[in-house]
Image (cartoon, rainbow, N blue to C red; front, side, top):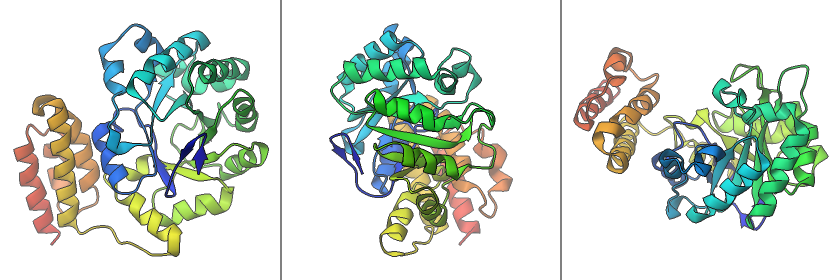
Length: 321
């Protein structure tokens, strides 16, 4: 797929999951074959106010490229200024968040709330595309609610205002992450625009990836929650969609090693005291469904050190050997 001047390989990209898609996780998924990555969403107002956390969220590692910085906000000028500021970190493209369903974002008029105001959404896209000389993409939802599924209209507005590609999460804001996924809305968007359309929503394995492509005719897919605790999903999808090869999940012993390497990188980047707090949720995802893991769930959710995680990883691998 081509996003402006950026060419991507493979079949799936990593979604910009807040609180999850940090540099450590993005690099891990990239190593397993994610075609490109999108960082955690960053507040345009936070950038304008020179917020330290906002700056940290924009840090990119050259090894994860191509990669994007995702911005959210509801003011065209502020979004344009934030995009210019983001260029300090040399993103390959800028992604505009018009799909986040979180109340703290939508109450301010940003994220998926912009789907209720297509005219403003268009002005934001136009302002950002004029402000930077790299491709600008947009991530939207099917609509605000079941009675207002306007993804096709918003996609056309995005294209008219210079967007290089559009990602469609096939749920409404009201659904949050509850089923069902409306694959038809992605197909309708694909028929309506000439820019690449990226399908998103409930891609959790090789078969659902193939189904997304077949059912929607999309140009690419984006994976979020399906990769949590399973970064190797990208390599499985790439193999399956290339020649039908079915790669099994790695054995539990290897799965635990991946978890430990991931945890160590998080702690190296953030310090163990802070990093171990981030590691806890990943530990629960990596061990989900494994024999013996349920018994350690409380301990994993209150981890205090990497050494403690190593002990549990050894015990879980032993129980699943």
